[in-house]
Length: 316
Image (cartoon, rainbow, N blue to C red; front, side):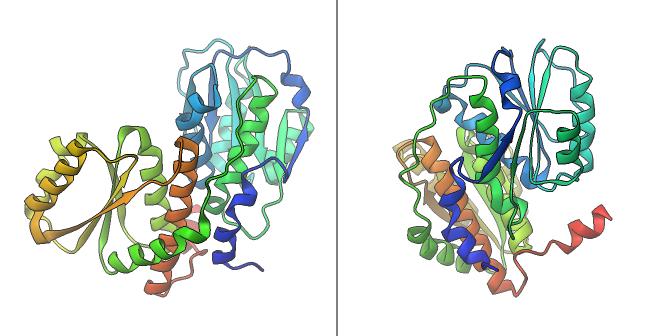
């Protein structure tokens, strides 16, 4: 069985269509959706967040809406394409969304999963389906595979621009992840991003929660300047801020220094430039770095990076 570390080093293998098996995608060829609705929970919801961020880069011509609950709220779309995503195929909220999507009239429904009830329902109803082998990965480790599963569905409908990913650097980022984990030892963690990379802040938060079993929270700047920094006045315990920076700017650098000065020795502040030439490379390198940081923090904390005992107990 590959180790968690080996899975991170091999993450680039997920970022292609090679490991996907497709069924009935030809049913989507002549469909003209006016919107995309991606339904998924937990680690299976992350690929939808990434799709929404990268939609312009992919030249996706319609709006993407993300659903992370068991109810699809009222939509503005008349003919949406629903993409139902579940790593296991057994997620209760996602199965509920599938039933609602099937009842939507003019909409179409496609599925991305590794198996379970969702796979069986898709095969029985002859729905467009992209399936994959889960191997020994957890859902949060499989965001690349599920994202490319979604893109494979969309390629049947739209002429997308899917460029080869040349700038992924898992081995290069390993040392930085270890250093960040050491800096965050025995501390609560805040992940701050600008609005355009809020999806990445959320991915960091969930990986730190599930893999390292530590409290972690995320917010965006400049919004946090107008509320969250007030909480630093009476902050208790040890905290570390990870600033995920898409680009350097004099204004942002001044802001980070000012906030660091205001909070003083209550909170450590670490700047993390996002590596890559475009949003896709910055996103995937940021995902990989979050995995390294979470893995090394799990080692420091003496916890199994794969286990999520509390979540499993809650689901039961």
